[in-house]
Image 1 (cartoon, rainbow, N blue to C red):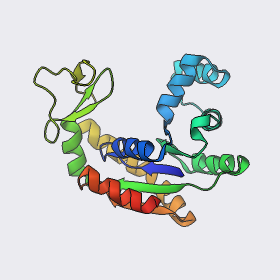
Image 2: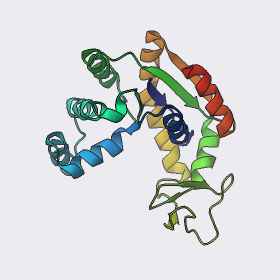
Image 3: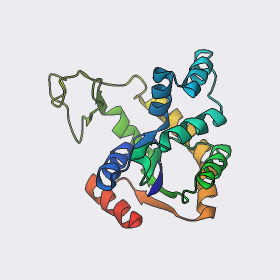
Image 4: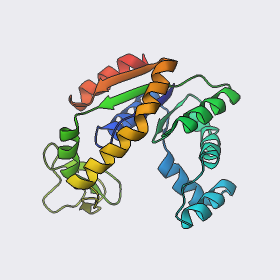
Length: 213
């Protein structure tokens, strides 16, 4: 199973990716995490990426695709993987297609999770995270303990600085501008599906499972 998950910040994409990963035994690959790991481990590509990032520049597509190639050659990707946060441009999508063809891997299924902007803003303003294990809480639907200590690992629970209405609104505008052409690209290729992320987590999970089956 080779899957790309689309979705604006706050739609529940990370939650669903973890559920899909656990059920199907395939890894969730976050390009941000992968990039940081490569830099930390000082791989050849990681060193190049680290130097570019130190200069405050964007990591070129060819390096990102090289990092993805390194990552998906690992044994845990033998039965597939979930891409989260990549591609973000048509050029990246085309490069990814060439990589999959070169590795004799099948085309991706693409699933978009949609939630109205007003609900996303409400969710993210109320979001709280554990700084240690990354567990997420929500003041409305899943409140953290009063002492703001994570019950899973004992880490401190905090609010991200960018989880404010103005920043979230700007992030949504950028997301829509970036992904609109991408969605059209994958729709034209087929295997593009949209589900509502406004429903309970379990219902969204069932809808996605039905698509994947």
